[in-house]
Length: 551
Image (cartoon, rainbow, N blue to C red; front, top):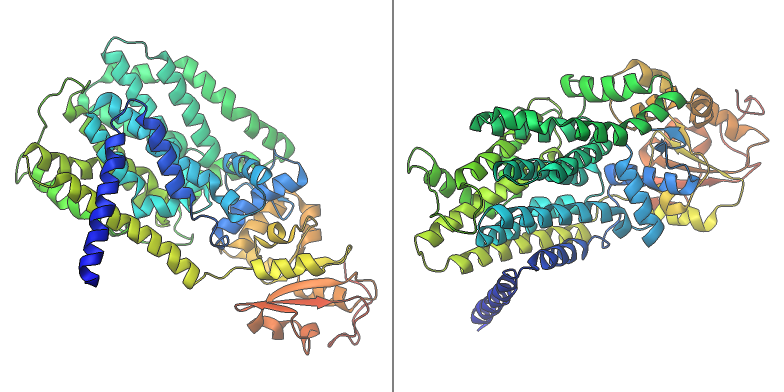
């Protein structure tokens, strides 16, 4: 009885999905695509705290813009933070201003980016392919676990992937318009505007990747004049007008910005091998296949349909298709290959780098269903819906797993701090930097970060220490006030003039700070503790210490 009930519920879900599917045939279907995609992606982003370190870092920088009122310079602990461009911070600061300091608002930019990418891809495919192919593709794309996870993560990757994808589609639209003797100026302006946004989101890859996709696609078609047409001087001028002002302002305010931001962050980080997350060249292939299950199972069918085993399937010509299917497939192949190969070259690899290949991957997966439909195979739509329901189940299971087995978060400690702090007290983080604490605690004063900074400067370590040291190079005076040694902290806590201190540290590192001996933390979260040291407290190890912290 129970098994039959489950099967009946599954049939009802498939029937409901088919009703929604039928609604996507309307001319205004793009609006429904946008609405359902947004609701699907945004519904559960509030259920768990920001994840460390990335979400805490990027949302924290955006919050500091909002708290300080300085929207020009990204700041990490009040120090210039030029690891990444400012667009994500600007957008997230706006989201926090509108919806408050919470995880849903912090992740909203990623959700909206994914929604726009899915919706515009649908519009693009409806214009240049069959409507049925467009519907299948965006369904596959919207419920992919990879895209779902990226939309639930507050960092730059989803925004950058969306802008790269939109730039590719705008450039392809300009090419198709030119070939059909229609005006292409609007599409070209849009392409350069989107490329400028991509540059302000992640730097040169916002230009290099879409440019590479379009270049190799047109070279494969031998459309050399089209390449020249894309190098349109009014568009280049628009790109410079949109991107140069921020960089010029930063260079004038912080000499050395250009060398650090362009030379070091773009070229050295791409070519060097000393950074975090080293992986082999083939790393992304199993990662992408695994994160796009169950859809990726269909890729073997696509290879047999289009590879040397079976020839090349091309669906019958249709009046609604404005371009040759092989031309569109070539664009998708260039799109997928350029993104995959480009990010496979450097040793340092992060999963989110290749999100931009998900739209063409969804296209190739839908072609397997299209082939089955062309062969009048029974149950194609129901098979598609079953795949979609399995993908949805995987996505929701991941959310439940985060709730049942939550990742470490400093939010509970920050809430204790917010309730208990007295004006004038200072916050110290010993041998750690919890990015999200200022946001959750509404802490607007500088945080004192304690570490062996001399050792950091001599090493190639790539973590929060390196970020703060690099930032302090642009503001040495502020850096001296915020980056302390353990000896300086010990002297400050032993001094008669210290204002009262809240201290965050790992529980297993308490022995490295003698003044904490015998003190019980006021709160704990995982392996991290929060201590409160009021003024004039008699502390261990203070005998013979100077009465104030050394300068």
